[in-house]
Amino acid sequence: MSDQEQLAMSLEKLASETALNDHATIDGLRALIDKAAPLVQAGRLNNIIDLLSVISDNIEFLDEAALEKTTKVGEEVLALGWTTGNAMRMANAQTQALDKPPGLFQLMSSLKDPDVRRSLHFLIGTMRIIGRQMKPD
Image 1 (cartoon, rainbow, N blue to C red):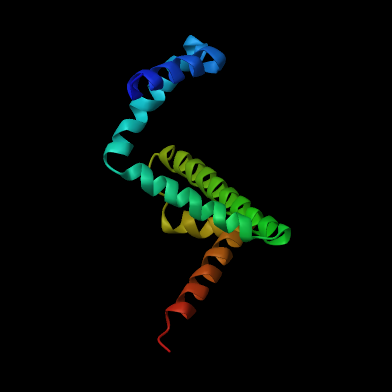
Image 2 (cartoon, rainbow, N blue to C red):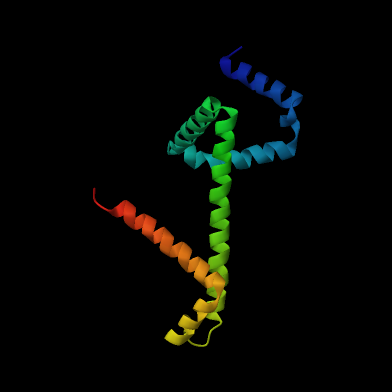
């Protein structure tokens, strides 16, 4: 029996004894292969696998406390992005609703709002820290 015949028999046996016997599974695998083909052909799948290996290795070396800290930082970054995106969308909608841009006195009167003052203080503090970091030593 040739190698190809043995391989065909092995594949047939595998297909008959597993989920590969299901047509939906076969269709899903075909779709996955079609999507993965360009990655494989260009060698980019290797990069993805290498990245997953690095992530896996780092997770393996982390103790429980370090893993929790890393997860918390990730959650904070995600929350910051979500909050910033929402704020920008809301401010954009409010700005687009204006008939004309506010004048200088309207802008100055908005400083009466504690939320405006709080956010300006945050921005000024952030700029101060960035400025300090930009100083030549």
